[in-house]
Image 1: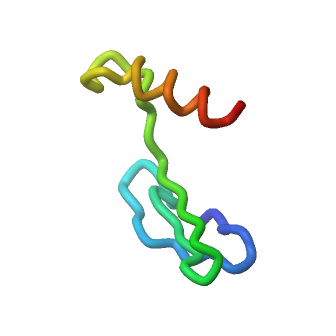
Image 2: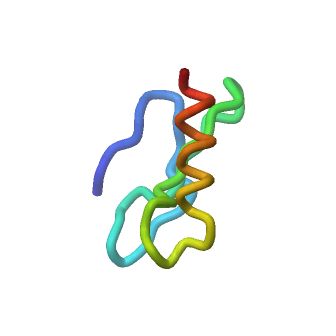
Amino acid sequence: MNAVPDGFARTATSDVCDVEAMSDPERERYGVQWHPEVAHTEAGDVVFENFLARCE
């Protein structure tokens, strides 16, 4: 199984990924394994562009 960073707990797994989601509620930090850029995600390109804009 893959490890999560210190302070985080694994909150979701799947058959293909040991860490689908993780959380550290004390620091209000959360992570999910998701690929909005794939063709089957509706408006995924818009979601991805919005994410990039927030990272700037």
